[in-house]
Image (tube, rainbow, N blue to C red):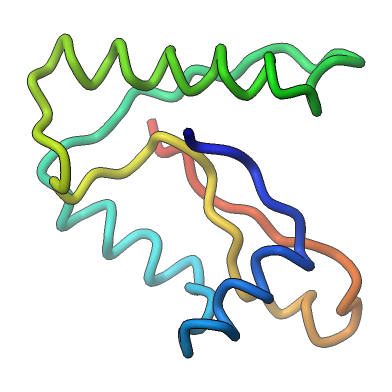
Length: 104
């Protein structure tokens, strides 16, 4: 299931595997190289937006789009979620998360 992550989780994942967070430029390059682009499907903000059910519903919306377009598992895709990125703001406000994506 695709789920959003906070800054702590994102940095823990990249540290664990020896990765780095992408920049906006890298996110754009991945988008350009992706064979399949998902159409953004934002859900309205609401009190339940941090619930497992909210995540499940959004994940299913992505799965439906993927099945309808015949996208194979493992294909390089983009647009299904926003990306956590490194930004200039990160240096001055290390407790803030920067997100980017959902190209149209």
